[in-house]
Structures are given as structure tokens and as C-alpha cells.
Length: 124
Image (cartoon, rainbow, N blue to C red; front, side, top):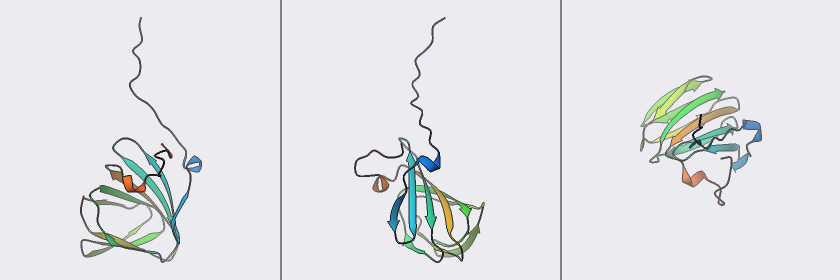
């Protein structure tokens, strides 16, 4: 019996082992990515505002903790712990954190190269 060599290069990490980057005042980010997909975990201080912006990446956001008021394509919606939001490519969106610290998990496809460390080495 012969075994076939694996073509999969597996990467596994625990969030506690992934470096925390201070993105701006009140926002910390952790990154984990593959060739075509990226996941980010963000800890954001209460009342922090992220301005309305858009990007070519498709995004799915999960609220792990706290509450967030989003403006998506001019419409307001409030998400709480456990809620999910899908943002298609190019859709304008911004957010205001409500009264408590917020933890968000964002998934992007393709990878947000603008988020990658300068050396290209990171959590991956």
C-alpha cells in the first residue's frame, strides 16, 4: 500500500497565539489568512466610530461581543452578540460601537493585502 503525499499545507492557531496590532486609538486587530481568504478579530472600545468606507473585498462580520450601529448603503441597522452581516464588494459601510467594548470577527475575500504586515509574515 502506498500513501499519496499531502498537497494541503495546514495552518492552525489559537487566537491567544496571534499577535495583537494596535490599529488606531481604541481598535486592536488580530489577523489570520490563507491564499484567498482572511479572518480578522477586532477589539473596539465603546463609542468608537469607523467612518463610512468601501472596498473591493466581500466581507462577512460576526458580532462576538457587544453592540454595533452600522450604516450600510445609507441604511441603519443595529447588531448585537451573535448577529451576522454580509457586505458585498463595493458597498459603503461604517459603524459606531455602542455602550460596551465590542469584539468583531470579520472575514474577507480576497485577502485584504492592505492589512498584511510589511514583512508578509504574520499569523499565517
